[in-house]
Image 1 (cartoon, rainbow, N blue to C red):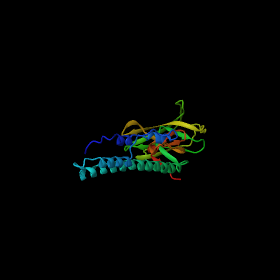
Image 2: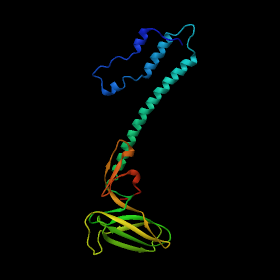
Image 3: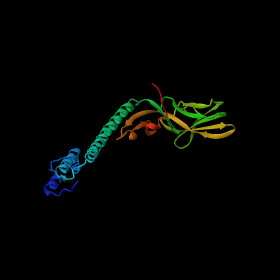
Image 4: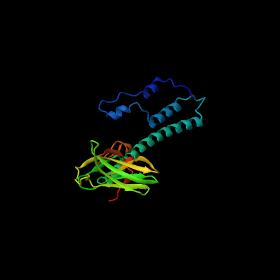
Length: 231
């Protein structure tokens, strides 16, 4: 294909200055060539080709294929963004139905609402002879401890009625919990998780940014939820 030297043709391909009334998006995209521009360029190339050396069919088909693929990729990107936006809205709607429900998350804190029992959980290893569940205040003072002998291995649920050793009900708030166990004759600390109600959902720009806000524990990712309590 020969080179086009016609200045009028080159001038026709230059972008003119956009009107000041155009939107910000239009100004940002003012330098982008569209599929129509590519086909216009191809038409001009065919019009100014050397008659003695016409464009081969395979060359023209290759160019048209490239233009079509570029436009298809652009449309795919747009459709994917719309799909991601729809997924985010759908997950936000589903997450909103969890407000008020209790969920279990890894935590060494136990949230007491002032009247109802607070629940936690731990994973008891095999060959455990005894576990000791202790509750502490913010200053580290021991409030209550309960010992369980010969607990079954596996997930073990812990419950605290909010009272101290003297039987007095503590104020609502967040308390530290600790579980010690005697496993095969050796003492070890067990990892704990807490059951806490969801108070609200924070919606981000994507599903990865979505957070559930838990009573007394703050914001957590959806992936941090280990269990959702029915009812």
